[in-house]
Image 1: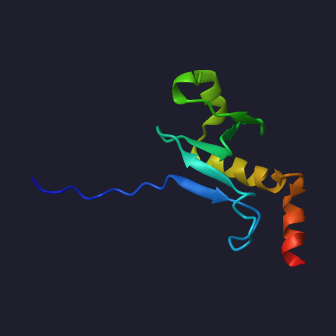
Image 2: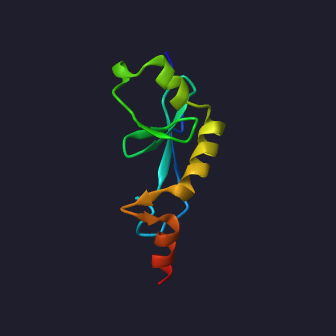
Length: 106
């Protein structure tokens, strides 16, 4: 029996309006994460973005209803689009993306 070739599957994308080298980039970032069955989630601090642009806590898999999944799982293109739309509105402790960018320039 011959050894099969390894496969490579990207499972996470980082979406942010702050550059990588900004000290606050991690805090102002969203992720688009693979959730199986060709579906992706937009994630931030244990919450998922739904198709209406609202954040919901992501419970453990056995507690997720089909209706919840239908609203919070997307094909990759849609998930990236939603994440890019949400990224400029991220706030951390009352600071907006623009505040973080201004502080970096100061």
